[in-house]
Structures are given as structure tokens and as C-alpha cells.
Length: 216
Image 1 (tube, one colour):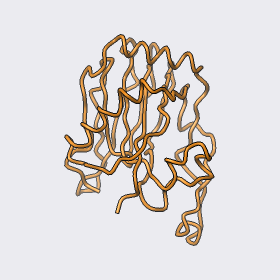
Image 2 (image 1 turned 135 degrees about the vertical axis):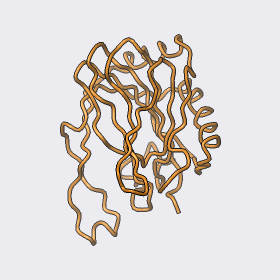
Image 3 (image 1 turned 60 degrees about the horizontal axis):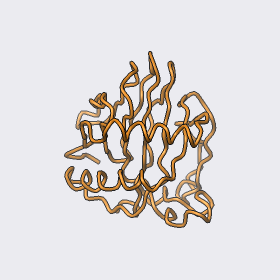
């Protein structure tokens, strides 16, 4: 899918005080090791067409520390920003829910390699066995918009980049200018993106995923 706007950026959208409160929330929830795998098991044609959920394992695709923040104040902050970006960027995606936000801590040498947050098709919808009975609002939905909030700036490295493809099929890598605390980028969840290794200090960010019916 070729988009007129592949991302929408807000400079200094949140105050330093709000950023500090979100970082503190992460420490209260306690950071744990976060691992992810950008590859998945090979499925047969029959399994793929039936929408079988592939198994993911742990690998070096991601190295960071995470804390889950099911916090109403945080939802109150991110939802208006998402609604504005969704309209202003011209996406106007049908958004109906939000997953629990994640606060991420990247120490020196930590990173997140190229990945996307979800394909967005009918075979990628969340099923009840994936989300559990406590999250029925996620069932039959896909991730449509992703949000990253930078919470501090006293670090080096850790650049946030998005990859896309033009008519010539040559990847275009864009470094998003998200370098000052409180800055926010919103982008379609199917776009590939990464966080490059941190070289000095600790990088804190908050990420959220907004969901709706699969694209059709």
C-alpha cells in the first residue's frame, strides 16, 4: 500500500513533567526483559489460508526492557493525539480499541531490529486464545496505527527509523526526527520500523497500538 503520509510527527507534544511521570510509571510496574522474533515458523499453504497463528520464539531481533502500563491517565493522553493524527494524515482508519501501552527502556547496546506491528489483513485478527477472556474488545481486530512517544533525550544512538518501498522497489529508510522528549510519531502498523542501538545513556519511550477491523 502506498500512502500519501507514512507517518505523522508531533514535536514536544508532552511536557517534561508528563514524560517523567510515564517513566516513573514504568519503574513502578517494574521493567522486565523484552525479547521478540521477527521471523516465524513456516506454514503450509493450507495453514496459511486458514489463518493459523504462527509460533514466535526468542531471538536477537530485539533487546530491551519493557513494562506494561494499563493506566487510564496514559490512555487519556494518547487517544486524542491518535485521533488527530489519523485525520490529519489522511488515513481515517476505523479505530475501535487500544492495546495496553508498553513503556520501553533501552540501555547501552540495546535495540529493536526491523519489524512491523501487524499486517492488517483478515488472517491477522486477534483470536480469543491469543488475548484471553479479559480482553474481548481485541478479538477479531488488527493493529492499524502505532504510536511512539520519546520520554527523554539524555542518551545517544537509538534512532527511530521507518522503511518503505517506492515504485522502483528500492527500500527508503527515513530517520524520524524524534529526538526531544515529549515528541510523538504515529504511523500505520504495517510499516517496517526499528530502533538502532543506544550508544550512551538510557532511552525511554512509550508505545501503543490502536486496533480496528481488518483492512478491506
